[in-house]
Structures are given as C-alpha cells and as structure tokens.
Length: 401
Ligand code: KG4
Ligand code: ZN
Image: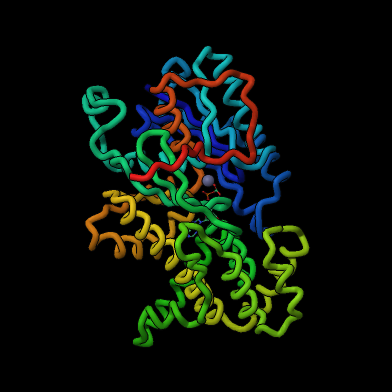
C-alpha cells in the first residue's frame, strides 16, 4: 500500500511516499529554520505563510522523486495535531483536497504518535526486495520494534515516557511538569546566544568545548560537570521538570548579578517577546565572555538533561520488564542522549532503537507510516476533520503487569 504523507505542524513542510508503513520511496522536507533563527524561535504567522508557499512544490517534488503518479497512490494522510493551528490547517486542507479530488481514503494523523512510528521506517541505505515487502505479515515484519516497549517521546513541545503494549496502545507513565526537553534546549540556546533550533547548536557548542578540553588531556567528565547544575529527579514518579535547570543556566550566563525578579519572570513557561529579548541580551553578554564558557555551560546543561532522561527511562524499562526502548521526537537526535541511554540499557540486555536523525525531527515519512497501521485497522477520517492544536497521544488506562 502506497501512502502519501503530509506534515505541516510547525516550521517544516514535509511530504513523503511510504510503502506498507516502512519502506520509503521519497521524502522531502522544506525547513524554515533560517527564517525563524532571526527571531530566536518560531513566529506562528510567518510559519503558516511559508507553509502556504511551499506545500504544493514539496508534494510535487515527492511524487517526482518516487516516480509516482496519482494512480499509484492508495491513500493520503496529513497531520491534524498537535501543533500551530495556522500551519496545521495548510497541510490538512491540502491533504483532504487531494484525497477528495482523486477519490482516495483520507486519514488525519497525530503528530506525536507519528514520532513513535518513525521507528518503523527502514534504513534508506538497505534495499528491500519487492517480494520481501509483499509477502510479509502487515502488522509485524522482521526489523519492527517488539512490544511491549518503552518509548521516550521528546520533542519541542512534549516530553513523555510511554509504555506501548501494541499498535495504538499507549499508557502514560510520566510527562514534563513545565518545559519540554526540546523547549529547554531552545531556551538555553537563546540564553547562550546560540542559533535556533537550540538542540543542534547546544550539542555542537558542547562537543567543541569537550574536544578542546580533551586536547588539553582533560576528561570528558570534567567538561560535562564544569558547571554544577540541578537535576529535578521527582523521585517516585516518571515525571520531568526542566525549568529550574534552565533558570540555573540563566543565572550562570548573566553572572548571577541581575535583579532576582527578572530571573523569576524568565523561568515561567511563556515565550513572549519580552523574554525572548531578555534571553538574547543575556546571550550576547555570555557570548562576549568567550566561547569556552558558553561551550562548557552548554555541555553541563546537556549532561543534566541527559542524566535525568536516561536514568528515568532505564528505571521504567526495568519496572515494566520490556526488552526494547525507543526514542522519538527531535531531541532523540541528540548524540549524548543516545550514547548514555545505550550505556544504561546494554548491561540489562535491553535494546535501544532510534530513527535516523532526519526522521527524528519533523518529516512526513512518519506520518505516512502511522497512517498505514490505522488504515490496517479499518480507520479513516471524513472530510470534516478539523485541526486539533492541543491534541495529545490517545492514552489508555494504565494496567499493572
Ligand atoms: O520533533 P521536533 O522536530 O518538532 C516538534 O514536534 O516539536 O522537535 C524539535 C525539537 C527542538 O526543540 C530542537 O531544538 C530539538 O528538537 N532538537 C534537539 C536536537 N535536534 C533537534 N535537541 C537536542 N539535541 C539535538 N541534536
Ligand atoms: Zn515533531
């Protein structure tokens, strides 16, 4: 089954064609990161206007790359939430219009669920024979993740630890009580004067600082603990909290000499203009103090986030006796997290899987993959489906094992 997936929930415009939920024929992503970098974060009105101009060329390019005509496509899927309402509306409307015009089944996809299904996409470099694709069982094929599993969903707006017992069976174990992991990376990047999106630039700054210390014959541990930063363990729960950590970075970046009230204001969840300009000012000040400090602060911050995510995920995997852990969402691209979690899980014989980097951040291949498993269950949406900017994963009641 060939599915055309469309993704437009934030500042990436994506279209992809995926066979049987796993095998990629083509994948095109147009990123607006350069535009939003000027503002230090995504400006929703700019994002939706950009979505409008890029969506049709991106879809046409995807069909071209896959050498597909509309007659080859079996279904159309588009993200309907969560995300920015204006951006979501563009992809969803185009997806419904295409399905209507070509008389194809249509499915709206939950963006968070799609991040999980990015783990079903096969490595592009491995070729799969058409025989292998057509003969296998649709629900499970060799190389698929094995249930039950724990999935750590960490994106720009969400941080959730989820027990997945089967296709579509999600139990919430814990979530962030304030900032999402990706949001913390983005805000700390702004504090340190690094570019948007924050995750890759914090990772890069940390890596440079670590390499510099290693050249001086010093240990990685020294770089990663150059600044003593707090970890919110929230013991006895699988919840996370990153806002205290972010505030601690802000204090260090400004030399802890500013008015206390300003710090408190900047630790709130809002990303209003006042705070963005405040972060940018701090970033400039911090950057003026020299790259090494910014790098070491980035390394110490990243280490604090990775510590909490890795330990809590390992504890959940042990408690629920799973044999596999998945990473999903943009922060799953983080190399330190992948390495550390692998170190936590390997002695326990638990397998860690994560998508290739291009499928961790927003893309439409994961949308097409998710749609396949819903269509298999006979699900489909009508053309009255609307966007749901606040959509969460469809959790079921927690059952003790
Ligand atoms: O999943 P995603 O592309 O979009 C949302 O659904 O939110 O995630 C974007 C988030 C951003 O906060 C970005 O800074 C973060 O993922 N991110 C990273 C890395 N690459 C992207 N965070 C840490 N390390 C990375 N290498
Ligand atoms: Zn995403």
